[in-house]
Image 1 (cartoon, rainbow, N blue to C red):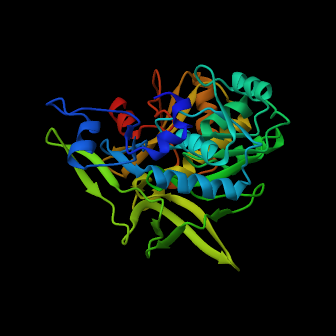
Image 2: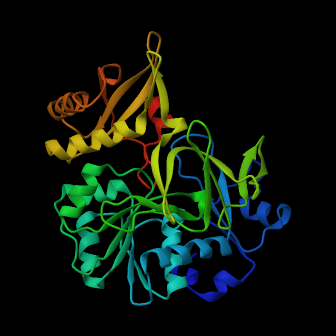
Length: 375
């Protein structure tokens, strides 16, 4: 569906179903067929989850939930009809679709980035359009910093989500004038749960969300913008797994929550699925990936791609591997040495591997299951 159609009132008011990325079962039944006939879904959008692990599934969100999220984000950042978005994320993911919802709810203008992602072209088009707002993922921010591209004077907020942004990358972007603001959210919450409003500040929980954690800090989310459930395939047929509005969604994320007067704040600590055991010690891969990003910036190793992946180890249970793509042997060795200087002894990386390309999602997340198969 054309971007312009999503900005028209009839898209949001009709009872139609929109599918971000469609698929079909062995008998040819599509998700649109299943949603319309079996679920009797009305005014819903379906997004394929962009996580790095697990089977494919589609998150079902009411269009009204997407607008509720859009309105609260607009209020959080003072977004009005005077603003201008430059859309640099795919609309079949909730991050890109959320930009269109916010533009519709606020009356702000939106222009889509021409062609594939290119940091220099992004800056040029931002400048030409007088863009004031953008939503990016950390890998895109890294590209801007690596190329030493200054932010256009018109830019007032750049929302960064879809993954954790290291403090080193954040500071480097701020020094180039990019007004980056960390956000935390997921497809199931129609976009943001919490976000920064000030430079370098904590992420404030948006008022539509009721959050709680268990003894291990794993987050449960409740709120009016929460998804209705998941569509997925089992034994060659579509099936539906509802999300209880009362019980909420138990995520796989570990977070820290705290209050300060009337404000609520969230700090992301890592993912359950991104934790491995090495010599009996729990090791979170997310922070190590952030350290890798910081080391690349420190050493000026901007070319190519790199990620840390866990592999099975008969002695240690798991071990970590530095995987690089289009990086010279000398630079890979420097990167490994620099990263190991920041890690605890049992985390240190003894192996590195080179691959043609690191499998990543549209939003830049490393697909660890595919990468383990390559290794």
